[in-house]
Amino acid sequence: MKALILAAGLGSRLAPLTDDRPKALVPVNGQPILLRQIENLTENGVTDISVVTGYRGEMIEAALAQTCPAVHIIHNREYASTNNMYSAWLGREAVRGGGFLMMNADVFYDASVVRALLAFPEENAIVTDIGTYLEESMKVTVKDGRIDRISKTVTEREALGASIDVYKFSEAGGKAFFAKCEEYILTRGDRGKWSEVALNDILDTVAFAPCPLDGRWMEIDDLEDLKRAGRIFA
Image 1: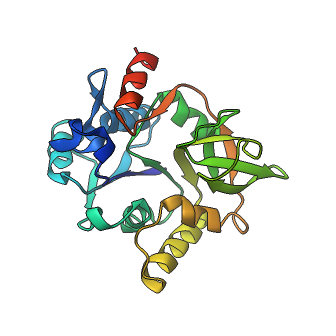
Image 2 (image 1 turned 30 degrees about the vertical axis):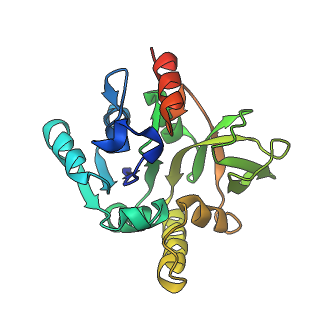
């Protein structure tokens, strides 16, 4: 199993902390978000890891050279004018040839999340905090046991729960996902979409299941989120 971490974003809502560092290196209780994610993966035997960098990518490269030199770096030079679908598409070759995990580098979570996802029997899955509704998060809906929608605009009445932005793809699921990304980026010339837009578009042809969350998590978008994460993971 391989892993693709999307870490190109500006993180402007975390200013001034992100004035001099990328969002992925902002620490929670002293541990940078990205390094926690890599630790979670390696603890569960996932060692073929690629990180897509962007804003202040040289800082991520330097941090990984010291702590995780085997991690593969892919740089999104267009980070300021693209969204994470474009970053995911840039990483397509790194995860070709098998199943993989994909995650955004602004989520701090326990290693048990990865352990549960790897053990989950369905080969395409979205880690879901079932019963939780958060305005800022992607939410999922389910029909006949499979996810039929992922979007921020899902209503509380419709939602099964919140996605924590950690995904598992089979080889076939990954091919369908990247083909849809390519349609947006190359055919439509749209490089500003979230990766979940492409994922949502393939849900009618690729079966994804909600993997119940096992552990703690916090998506860190702003300074209040960071404070809350510090308390949750104290």
